[in-house]
Length: 394
Image 1 (cartoon, helix red, strand yellow):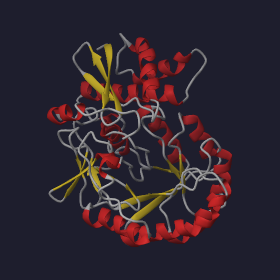
Image 2 (spheres, helix red, strand yellow; image 1 turned 180 degrees about the vertical axis):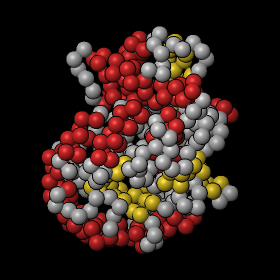
Image 3 (cartoon, one colour; image 1 turned 30 degrees about the vertical axis):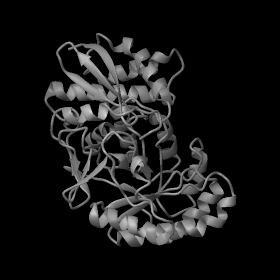
Image 4 (cartoon, helix red, strand yellow; image 1 turned 60 degrees about the vertical axis):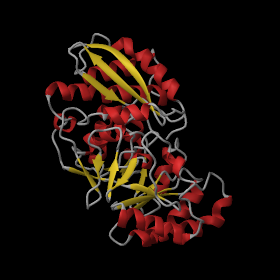
C-alpha cells in the first residue's frame, strides 16, 4: 500500500482536517491545525506531502522521523509539529483500517472501555449550538449576570442535567501584579463551582499563565477547595518557574498544552515539576509522540489529561490513545461539540454517524471500529460544510 495524495478540508466552524489517500482505496483522517494559524499549518502540510508520496503509510515511526528531519536543520516549532500531528493521526487511521483494528488495539490494547470526560464551567449557563456554528453564536441568549450563585448554578446544570462528573474552571488573571485584589474573588468563584457540582465531582482549574507571584497566591487560596489540578501557573516557556511553583505547593500542577514534542516534557519531568501532563495530540506530535510522552510520565508517576479544544476528530484520536494509557486521568473536549437531545449529552453530533454519548458516570465508550473508530455523518457533514468557515477557533 502506498500514499498517493493529500486533501485538506476546511470544516466549519473553524477546523482543518486532512484526508490521506492510498492506492488501495483506504483513506485516513487527521487534524493538522493550530489556533489562529490554520493557513500556515496547511502550507506546512503541503510542504511535507512530497516526502510521504509513494511511501507505505503503515511505516508510521519512520515517516514521523522523516517529517521531523525535513526542515533542513530547523526542526520542530508549533507550525511544523501541528502539521506532523495531523498527518500522524491520519496515518494511524489508515494503519488501523488496513489491519481491521482500532488504534488502541494496535498500541497494546485497552486499559479501559470508557473514557472519563470533563467540561469547562463558568458564569455562563451551558448551551448548545447547531453543528458547525461557533459556540458564541448561542451565548447571548443564555448569559446571566455575574456573581458566585451563577457559577454554582452553571456547575449544577452540567452535573445534574448534562451528566458530567468532572469540570474545569478557567480564570484569566493576566501577567500583571495588580490582580492581587481579585485573588479572593477567584477563590470564591471556584468554591461556588465546587458547591454547585457537589462533593463527588472533581473540579480542576486553569489559571492561564499568570505572573509566578500571583500563581502562588492563587494556588494558596484555591488549595483548601481541593482542585483536581491547577493548570499552567507560569509563562509557557519557563519550565524553571514551573519547577519552582510545583515544589512550593501541595496542589497537583498540570501543563503542556503548548509544548511541542517529547523533549520539553522530559525536561519538566526530570525537574519533578508536573503531576499532570497535558500534551495536545494535534500539536505535540500526534498519536506517535503523545504515546511516548505518556510513557515518560508513567515512569515519573505523572498522569495524562490530553488537551483537546478542537473538533470531534481530534477528540476521537485522543480517546483512542486514552484507552491504552495506564496513567490516564481525564479527557478534555470542546464545548462547541456538545449537543443535548432527549435527556442525553452527545459529543460530535452532525460530524459522526455515532457521536460520543455521555453515560451516567460522565464517561464515553471507546469506539471499537478500525482506525479512529468513527464514520462521518454524510448528511450532517453536508449541512456543516455549507456553513461559513472562520479563522478564529470555534
